[in-house]
Amino acid sequence: MGSPKVYKNLINGQWVESKSGKTYENLNPADQSDVVGVFQKSNADDVKDAIDAASDAYKKWRLFPAPKRGEIIYRIAARLEAEKEELSQEMTREMGKIIAETRGDTQEAIDMTYYMAGEGRRLFGQTTPSEMPNKFNMTVRQPLGVCSFITPWNFPMAIPSWKSMPALICGNTIVIKPATETPLSVVNFARVCLEEGLPPGVLNVVTGSGAALGEPLMNNPAVKIVSFTGSTEVGRKISEACATNFKHCCLEMGGKNIQIVMDDANLELAVDGALWGSFGTTGQRCTATSRIICQKGIYKKFVEALAKRAESLKIGNGLDESVQMGPCVNKGQLETVLSYVEIGKNEGAKLITGGDHLTGGDYDKGFFVQPTIFGDVTQKMRIWKEEIFGPVVGVGMFDTLDQAIEMANDTIYGLSASIFTQDVNNAYTAMRDVYTGIFYVNAPTIGAETHMPFGGTKETGNGHREASMAALDVFSEWKSIYVDFSGALQRPQID
Image (cartoon, rainbow, N blue to C red; front, side):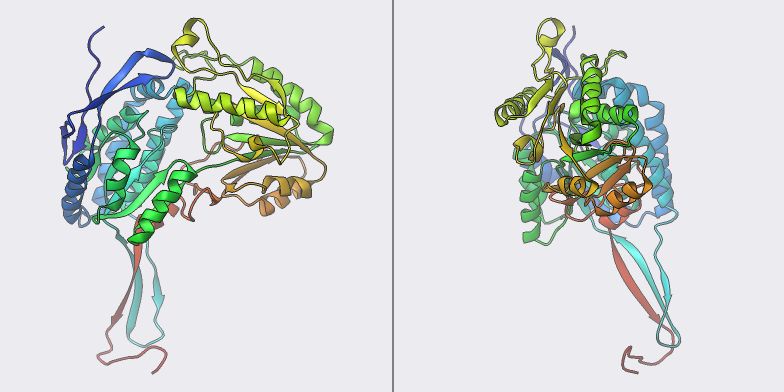
């Protein structure tokens, strides 16, 4: 085998090495002998160069007509579409999730990019009558400036697109730090943007660790907004840092999402939903189904059916089309999952199936764990309360819908929830009373679409939403404009 490819930072339209002179290897989590690439171990000087480039580029990019920005973004979408399979294959190598899911990840980036390209001819403001004669009132959007993005490893192209495309169409410039585990997908994304005509400096990429790069990405005075997707613990620190300088801050953080199964639910559909919600992406989604509660009449049948399906899942390298669940993203995540399995056992939850580290043969090359189901889970247990971010789901029981809603809301998070029922009254009651940013009826807790707002309540987020038109409010500010053509001084509320 030849030497692995070395990838560089993108700063001011050029691919450059880090000033640190250091690099790191990115390894396939399903096969640690597979070196996906060598990436720059960037430092604060690299971040400063990237922010300086973005600051200079902003002067022209903000004045570039929005419809013309949209045309560039449209070309980027078409190019991503043309390269979808190659991009997806490389994403599976670096992230581990199965190829069907990485194709979906890439498609989500394509969808978001096409969607935001169209906003170049909209970006609507409002006109409204003035209370004074011979006066005209309107609102317009204005960009913020330089945006710092810190993106996660579980959706390494979709989430960067959620942040980048609304920011770009509004006229902002960007510095992205991708997750250490998945830099290639962002590098590929940036390459396509550059090759399809995005001007130098408008989008910049620095790779490396969050510990080394987080502070300079947040505290540089040229940065006007920090957008972060990751843990609530890190998000809290980012929020505190941004508050000091009144920077805008968009946070998408943890979740402890619940699926409610009523007695009248379509059992097969509810099991399908739970299987996909709990073990899709190896449970490594902020929207993953990590809590399930069943009404007493259906509990036993549901648990038995879900366990049978989970035990039949084929686990392995996601590049194999027949594989249904890939590895944990790294050794640390595997150890976290296994530690929570022990916590669940010690707390008295009933281990229904799974819970073991898979070893032997090809499993020894990666970080594989069985799909794990706990039964008899109660609200006092840590596996009920804490985000695990792996293929572990706890199943509990309830009597009434009111109790189910109370249990659903018993979490510090508020991202996603779902209910399976054939009763429209139950569905609408749960829709109204479960306090989350996303809610599904007869569908699992995962499956967001790009033209709908994405985000959560409580310690999941800080009130902003990603994707859809809601993202435009994150990456622009409103300006109210008054044009008085009366030829006289007019004083609202006085004259």
